[in-house]
Length: 102
Image 1 (cartoon, helix red, strand yellow):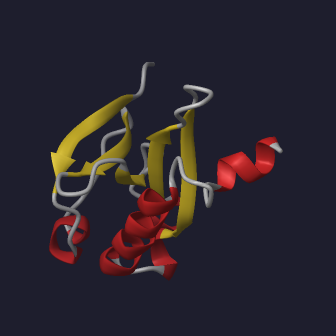
Image 2 (cartoon, one colour):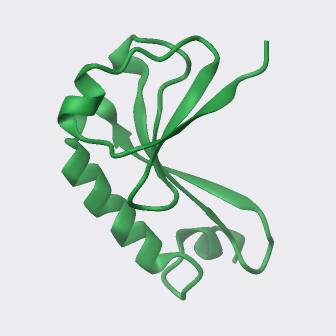
């Protein structure tokens, strides 16, 4: 079975409380912040969910997925702040991926 990505939605507490992803859905993306999402792994079991930020590394053209933390450990607002911080560092001298390459 092929996994798909759910359409974008504003990731808020109320939206996430009612979220029951089908088995075919792997990620739910935020409509406001590009690259910010919730990895749901096709399960309604929230203990397996995690906040993520995805971007394309300019030098290598690789898609980089950063795990920002477990769903149960961060609120949507905390995860969004962490994603904004990661976005500000992406493809700069503070990029974590560059540190791994060197």
